[in-house]
Image (cartoon, rainbow, N blue to C red; front, side, top):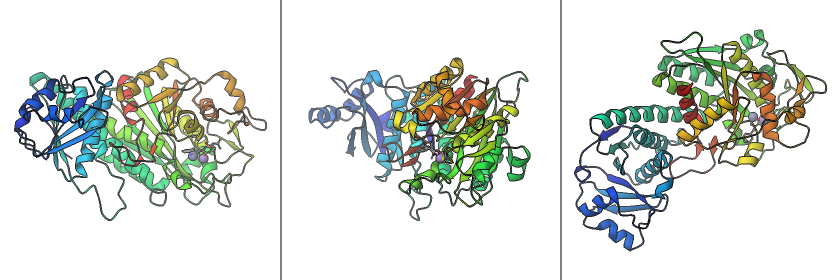
Length: 496
Ligand code: BES
Ligand code: MN
Ligand code: ZN
């Protein structure tokens, strides 16, 4: 998809559709919309009068062959209340407009900016929304929706200074949107197509194309490094595990500067192992590698955006299978750090592989850690599919990440990590156990377990079990992988 900035008068634009946003306010025909009303001979006022145009969020009003403009159609998208409007809304509106028009066969759309939207932020948000929304989860359908190419222009008074800013924002938006779609494609893959080895190949190819260093540890190397927690999960099936390491080193890396470690859970299929999951809904467990895919997407974006901080991405990848060689409840494993773990439930496997991932990232030099994982069903109970659960041990670092989430329009909510919860994972036969003892707080228990391995290194855990997958399509997004947390982490890397 091609997106360009355009400064022409809106009436002169030839496109399949001219699109703009309408606020829900006592008189929705204001500012840019009033200009549009004048050019079209009072069309918008008529629509308001008839009740067809109210500005309610995501209301779509489509008019064919509008008078006074060259575009074939005019699409007015409800933007909700003006006070609540910002880049997060713009991203969704742009995406929703694209999907709405794409299904109607429109091939070029022109987004007419509202007042004050000649900024880098606006161009970035619109580009992100457009690229993200243009993705379809139809890779394995013989008839593709993706075949329908759409191009877009961002229409505003881009003059000298604002044009330079707009171009920058647009490029950033394209990079981030494409990285999100890269992640979504990986997450959507079924487990027969995307095994740990295939994920490693995909990471290697991405790194090569992006100009990043990439090292893949195979099962032999993993055993040599004594990654016993990762191996214990992998032993349940014939597919060997992989530890994927992708590194971004900035041109003028300071030897004493911070190093961001991004650790992503990549269980390419989670059957639960011997503590097997119920059949109903089990097919969804192909997305149990979303954390890993998100981190790889972040790296892809960072390679192009070139922040000044070094970033090491570590993705432990395995299946969780219940084969004859599988670990059994009660088994005791020794993690790479040397800590012993009593595996009371083989379905709490994410924290096991993250234990070794986090230890390895620290060994490679990470001074700050973020992990992302589809870790617990309990986070879905706590926050549903609205917010990512955020757990941290260092307030300053956690606040920084939450600030990035806000900037990027990704909903995240802080969860507690009080010392009282430490008792939940205290081991009886080993140092720690991988589940609590029925005292509740399942998502916190999982975070406390990973904390054992992060130690004193500033660390944030993101539980994305509820948010990494859209069960239903949204007006701005196809059903399936959401790539949640990618934008936030790209922003965070720029702020370290
Ligand atoms: N991958 C699951 C968590 C999950 C659940 C992700 C629902 C997406 C949707 C994880 O490995 C798991 O099985 N967690 C268990 C932990 C329990 C055994 C302590 C859970 O949440 O039930
Ligand atoms: Mn599990
Ligand atoms: Zn899992």
